[in-house]
Image (cartoon, rainbow, N blue to C red):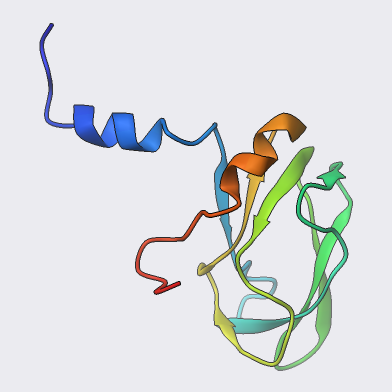
Length: 114
């Protein structure tokens, strides 16, 4: 068996089921940061393409963040509240299989400090 330079990373990454870390969306051409006004879905809850996952406040308006595909919210990384979140910063983790959502209960984004 030959081990490549990424085998350790592959084993670490493989400790979680397939998932996507979703960043704060840029919902307008000038948006640099936003605030999550309200989550419309909860952890463990499935969603379909077109469902509104959360409402995001920008400096100009409150905009719906719609799902582009079907999936399940495995973990919410950014709570609703007054704190601004830069575009691209992780706000949630999604999975395709509802049975995989529970595996992310202790998931922490590297560098987030918590």
